[in-house]
Image 1 (tube, rainbow, N blue to C red):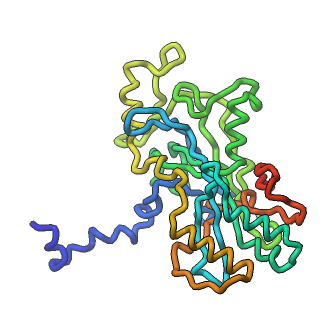
Image 2: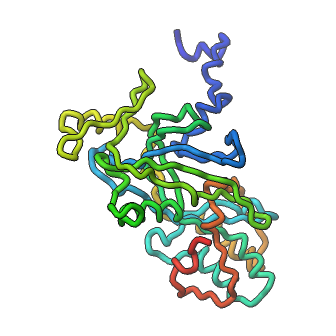
Length: 319
């Protein structure tokens, strides 16, 4: 039977996956914390993930995390100018949106300073994780997805690496002696802003070998060790398991601005500084979800004394 026969014989039911939330939630491979799915709002979100090394499809070991600086422009009365931009700072280049923000902040003009709040900033990290427990999204247990996180979780990974928690250094990405990460997320409100708080998240105290998920039995089993390392007889199975994923980490690497994006930034600059009216065609203007732009990672320095030569980490530091 020709597949195109479905057009005429009522066979389109198999093409309605978009109605099935379980099938459409992770088309992009991102593991998301969705606080609307919490059964108890007071307790918040709880799940367990395991950070995984970046084994590429070519058999090479890449960086465990990809770092990406992103801007979101949110001009409420000109949605055609709103959108996402990877910052040239990802490539150690001058960023026009960063410069625009500082220019407006340093203008001593109350209107421009207020308008500068429409320029958002985020530094995020992307890593592979294995979903070990998730009562909110049980269909994801056992899957390898890509987890996007900010400075709060990055600092927890660094603290483990330096042995600041237990006194024993631990690379949480290690297959022989890594650690499961308990994600605890609650909704916090500050003024008119509501944002997810990850501060209560923590790594489990004990280091263990990688848990591998066996779909047929729906159970995890830790990989056997020999002299503290993955047994040679199990290494092929581990490699195969690590590559059982639908998306690649490198797909989330920062990209250079296109000519169209450069033109759009010029339009944004002119509009916000009052030099021209907006007339740019509409693009991707979807507002960031709470897990995309955390409150802690937004532009928040309201000091008119800030200068473009200040250290970036000082200016963009988490609240």
